[in-house]
Image 1 (cartoon, helix red, strand yellow):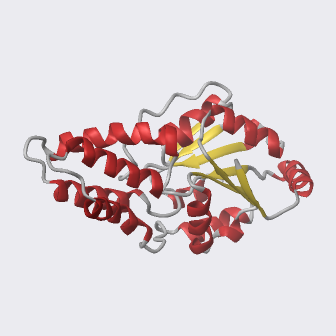
Image 2 (cartoon, rainbow, N blue to C red):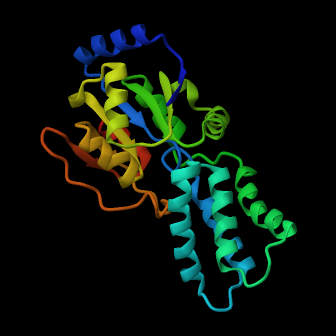
Length: 251
């Protein structure tokens, strides 16, 4: 687990505790596909990869299902990020190719993953304005998972880092990690919310850790991040909004 600090921890914790009396809450906010577009670029790369493979026996949907399984396996070894994605594409091609995989083919396949990194940060609608509004009333902590260098780069390029009192870049978002973050910052469960688009990483494990959650659906959430949204267990609360800017109506 890594952190990009913007305040000394003791000062930040005291500020959070003091301001709870004034109605301030703590919002842990996801980054990819919550603040800015991310998965659409991977989907385009996958589409190009499947077209390039042009398999004679497997349909595009069958190829995609195999790639999904390979990605699940790659995450366990390589984590998240472009390196893992490139490895998954190569592994899928090697499993399905009917011809020898030459070094030239390896370079071509990896180029689909490299194309993802070339896209500029594309903020989702009204995100900067909403973050500005929220940061004036509440405590914001960005909480994202993935490769540290890749995520740090996106955060710096996004132009919204200064709205957050701290940034957490974690290898995985599970119940234990949410409990660890809550303990690290001395967060009070009743006034802490995880905001994100992924049921599997943002909403369900945060609820299981005893926190509240805000589900902000995204039409192109990664299939491995999607799933059914869990029912909160009292006293935990779940809020569902249509878009990120709707947070201004609730906080």
